[in-house]
Structures are given as C-alpha cells and as structure tokens.
Image (cartoon, rainbow, N blue to C red; front, side, top):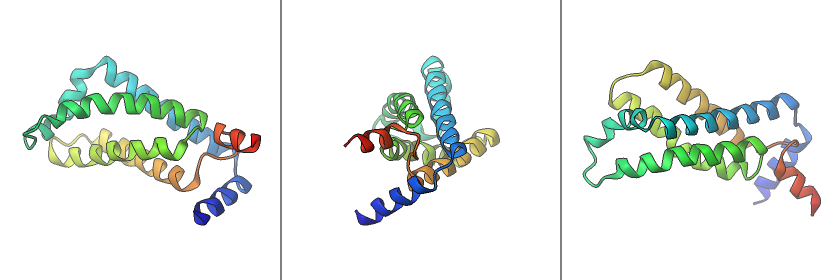
Length: 143
C-alpha cells in the first residue's frame, strides 16, 4: 500500500500535460473501438473465431458480450481519469487475448501492432496512474 502511495506522489509531482493528453487519447481510442465492436458484431465474431475451435463451453459468446462494453466503459473512465488503474486492469485481459488470437488464427499485422501498442500504453498508465489533470486527483484533493 505504501508503495502505491509513493508512486502516486511521484506521479503527481512529475505530471506533464502530454501524458494526460495521451491518457485521454487512449480513452477515446478504446471508446471508439467499443462503439465499432457494438456496431459490427460480426467483425468481432470473426476475430474471435480461432477461440471457438478450442472452446467447448460457449465462452466465445461471453467474450463478445464482455469486450465491447469493457472498451466503452473503460474508455470513458480512462478519458476522465476516474478509476484509471481499475479501468486499465479490465482492459489488460482483452489486449493480451488480442495478441494471442493473432498467433492462433490468421495473422492480422495491423491488429497485432495496434494491440501491442495499446497494451504498452495501458501498462504504462497502470504503473503511472491517472496524473494531475484527472478526476481521481480532483476527488483526492477534495478530501
């Protein structure tokens, strides 16, 4: 617990506007991916088709109903900097699975690169936190 508090203090002391803009861009990107997956569910089904070969219990349908809402809600939370670490923790299984699925099925180089880049940025914000220009910081200062 003290380790997280010391990381938060360091992050708040060394916060920069470009980092906050990157966090907001990540939130917008994830939100738009969620909207895209909601509007094109067949595309999401096609992406998850390599899992259906190994899945005997219908978990692919669960994933379809988890991915789009997680991207929508997580994107909004990350954009505003509200519960950023929790929202990113919800995105990590999706992004790791996106990388693994590329190796299981047909290789989509653009999707693989996008998933690796997004995972890298998410891990960075998981360590760094939401920053000074966020709802988390605002609510913490109100106490």
